[in-house]
Length: 329
Image (cartoon, rainbow, N blue to C red; front, side, top):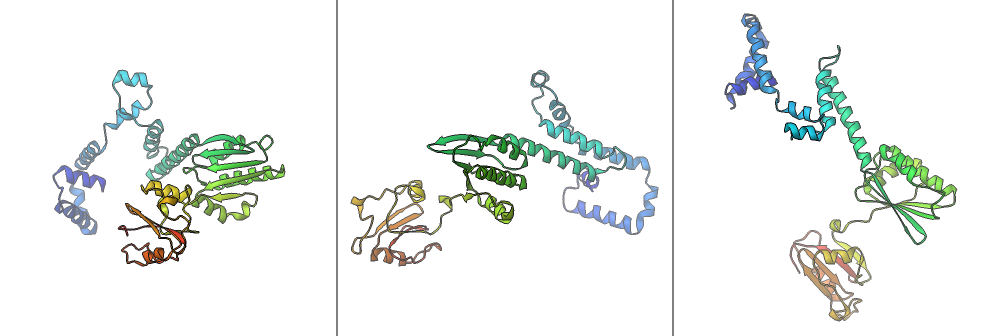
């Protein structure tokens, strides 16, 4: 069908009528007019296929593939500035050869081999992005790991940690770009945990993403020695979150939310932080964030006001409410 489409476009059949006529002609030949094909010279069919090949093949890719195997100095002398990664050039050549040689192979086998080579290449390159940063804080040693954690990086992870020389408490902190991918990574975590416990030491894996914790929970019978904590919810994902107590913290997620949305700080001289029954409620609005602070009836009245935001619902007085809304109250 690629050849038919190419011939159709080369002869001006770029509209809707051209494909329809081509499809009807093929149907007629298949359903009864195939004896007429015997009157078409084989040389004419071969000529048509040569034209199709000449117009289908991307000739500009040949210099790109050749440039992938040349050093940079030679590419500059020859003016070959356009190149593809060397592994891609190797895959192109291998797939092209396997389409016809050796006997018994076809394009399906060639594509399968090409996908396998690309998969191995990706795994190899991903292993190079795995990094471990070591720091010590008081009596706690922390390992900050960055990059995909799977079979190519699991062995490296095991070699970096040293249960004999590490202190009594060790933390392994996952970055935002780190997550578990396979059983090898989970086995490495469990093996390290068992080794530290055998020496009377504690190791905790912190800040695991939801996907990683889901994998661990599904294989909990294989992770009996592992202690871990899930990553805290990010501020950007908070919708209609409550804090009890009526006290506005200076830091933490709520403090970051205030600074992120450009809200002014709330101090005791601006109103009551730990509001009493008779103290006025503090309502601060900026952009799409509203903060209500106070253990007072006014806070309840504010929350009962009509709003167009689906995240705004009635809340019990005596809490801090952070709710993204469509318009300030």
